[in-house]
Image (cartoon, rainbow, N blue to C red):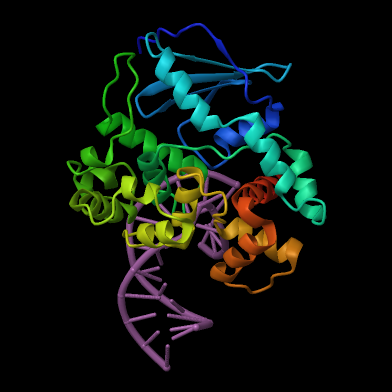
Length: 291
DNA sequence: TTCCAGGAAGTCG
DNA sequence: CGACTTCATGGA
């Protein structure tokens, strides 16, 4: 690594507490961040190496490698969002009438939904099926190390979907992808053929975008919702995984509901920013389990 | 050892 | 439609 990092700069549109900072970056939305010390994360988004550091006055500082400051600043503005948007999101969620949601929001008062690059989000969540977060990170790190593009700074970018076309399925299995390898290879071909493209989904409303994503092998409702929420900024998407099923059973008395019904309930009950509510519930439940 | 992990898709009744 | 299997791999 020939890290030559720029000076730290202030990110003025987010003042999180430490827990919200950590949970947002490394709580199961993104898998590219690793802690370098108690208050600092390092990662590579597309071809931009980044460091983010939390300060006790709740200011966030960032730095990138030299000559990338401009593109890094623009990327972060989209990736992390801004105070004005989130004041509206928080205010719109039904915490006034939902005491469990309020409890979850009080615990992580500055939690945000990342807005990640489309291709990287799809790739990550195709890896996510019946894997723990640490394992998803390992798979993606192996892929990055083996098949990613070398950056001038010495870091590596994740392979793009075009590049994944050149990666044999067996090589993916060597990166511990298991049965997910075939889905990645088939998806790479389908995206190349152009019936569904990551760009064409951008302009579609939530339901149509979800239908399109679900035509890709290995993408069902849950993974589609994750990609739409964490990549396409569809805040009404309500991913239902095993944790959320547990949450809705324990705290909302939805016993024996199917994931499809729970997803529908979530969008109705929590409203147009249901995906943010989902992340509060998800993070809180996981934190309880760790205790 | 057994169970489960930010599931999806195929089969069977 | 719903219930059950299989898919690979490793953590708890």
